[in-house]
Every structure is written in C-alpha cells, then in structure tokens.
Length: 393
Ligand code: ARG
Image (cartoon, rainbow, N blue to C red; front, side, top):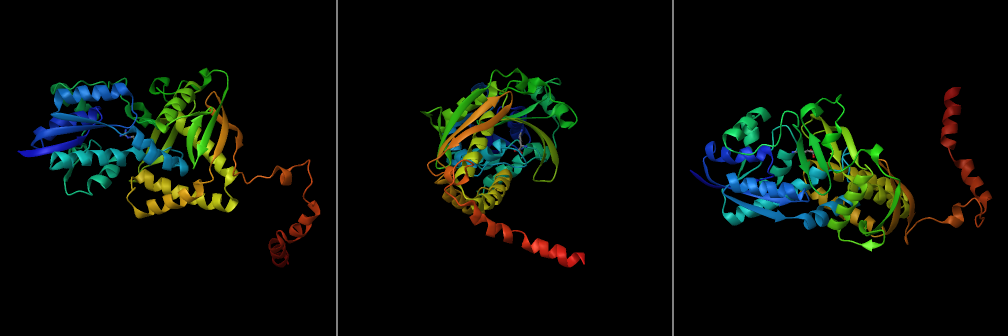
C-alpha cells in the first residue's frame, strides 16, 4: 500500500468517485481532500465537506476568497481579462487551487497529488502546471481510466456516494466568485437553446426590473467602491453579482477554443465580471493615450491567453503584469453604468487623470484656431493619392 494522496476536491461527481478509486485502484492508504473556497456557493462547500467526511479520510477547507480577489482577479481586471469573450473564471482560479493543494500535500508528507479532470479539457493542464513543480506523483484517475458519466454514477451508487446529477439535470458546474460555468448534457449540442434552469446567478433578462444606475469607483485600476461606499474586493464582487443578477446581466453562450484545440460550447454567468470589465475598459479610454491603449490591447490579449492556459509561472506573465501595473496608476475615477434587462451601458465617467479637454473638443467653445488644421488636412493621405495617380495610368 502507498501512503497519502491529496486530492483537489469539489464535492462533485468526478472528484467524489476519485476517492474510492484512489484507494481501490491506486492502492493508497489515505485520501486527503482539499476544498478550496474561491467563492463558490456556501452550500456547495458544506455538501463537499459532508461527502468528504462520509467517504474520505481527512478534509481541509481553505478560505482563499480574499487572496483570489486580490492576487488573481484584480490583475485580471487591470488586464481586461478576456479569452475569446470568456471572462476566465475557472481558468484564473485553478492555479490558486492547485497551489493550496500542493501546500497541504507537503505539510502532510503526502507522496502524490490527484485531480478529477478529464483528458479533454483545460483544467488538467492548469492543475498540472502547478502540481508538477513538485516531485510528487501526479494522478488523474478520470483521464487514466477514460471514465464516462454513466459509469461514474453507477460506481458512486455502489460506493454509497450521494449523487445529485440526473439524466434530466446532467449539468457539470464550476463556480467561483467571478463566474459560474454550465456544461454537459444537451448543452453539448451547439444548436440546443439552453433552458432557463441552468442559470442560478442571473434571472432571465426579459424579467429584469426598471433600469438602475450604479457607480463604481476605481483606484490603481481596481474597483474600490460602489455608489460611494468603499468596499473590499470580495464584498464588492459579491454585491455586484447580486445586483447584476437581478437585471439578468452577464450571460455568455459561446464556442470556445480549448488549449488542446477542441472547440467546446460553453455557458457562463458572471454579472460582476461583466460590470467591472465594462467599467474598467471605459475608464482606461478616458485616461490612457491612444498609443497606450493600442499597445495595451495586445498585452491584454497575451495576458488572457496565458491565464487561460494556466501558465502564471511563465516569466512573460510577470513581465506583462509589470507593464500593465505601470499603466494603471492613472486608472482612477468613477464610472456610472445603467443596468437594464441584460445590458450594461456606461452612461458617465470622470477622472482626475482624464486626458480630455472639453475646451479643445467642444462645438461651442473656440480656444483653438480651426484653421491650424488645414495644413494637416493637406498632408493627410497624400501617399494614397499619389499611389492612385501613378497606378491608374
Ligand atoms: N471552459 C472553461 C475553462 O476552460 C470552463 C471549464 C469548466 N470546468 C469544469 N471542470 N467544469 O476555463
């Protein structure tokens, strides 16, 4: 028999069947489970703890919410984190979860680490990018054994593991404070319209109430207040998820290119992420120069791609963060947004660092001599005009 294995545990079907499998098929004496709280529903954590108690040997629950927001989501906001339209919820949490699991494994003197990811998705890569920084053995029972959901359900029943997925509700959910993803079942048909029941954070946009205007304050590129009340990141995001959810804000239904190249149909809900990313991008447009904005958009894309792949230890990731941080010093101010039946619209913004001069741009005022522009207009496009002339002959 082998000693201790530490399993990244969510309480879901996959990671739950991993517990007996690690004992029966991999011959471990002790399975230690680690539930990392990154803002998933509290009852999910309680359920996970109860299941761990029932079928595992020892469980740790780590509250990583504040660290997740401060060290992962705030950089994401500064980078306008977005991969093909996905706000990167699951992606950005995996490295932190993996780090916590690894820390416990080292303290416990475990010989192996395990996760419940399949061989088809991104999460195996994100976990292992961190796990493999140690010398511990890395195990992925789902991937090794090529398991199907049906087999897992049967196996769970035989082993007295409570199962909540059914044929009618086969959804595979991943949740943290930034987003909730729903996959599986009929959703795997990109032509299938998702039923309302898959959504838990957002009500249907058409049932949203009268429009509402909220104001987000930013300092150093990160949100610090809501409607003039200063709030810590966790409270602010939680509150925005609630308010945005009422208005049906932040649903995404998309085709996503996984790292392995597979295209997947994904459904997400993420009210706070949509509101904060919309507000942040707008404020940047007010305070950064055209050159900064255009260059930063490439940096943001690269940042998002590395975050999607879970490659946060890649030195380029740090380099990009250094550039981004330098640009964010001036991203200070307030943005007002109107929430209405699924939409978020910026309706006002202000900043002490605004690179905006009403005086210069106004239709009504004239501190600028318009005739100065004539010389510029004469040169503008002259190469193109010459090109047209010499090639048309
Ligand atoms: N497609 C998203 C991603 O790769 C969400 C994955 C959800 N993961 C899960 N195990 N259910 O980040």
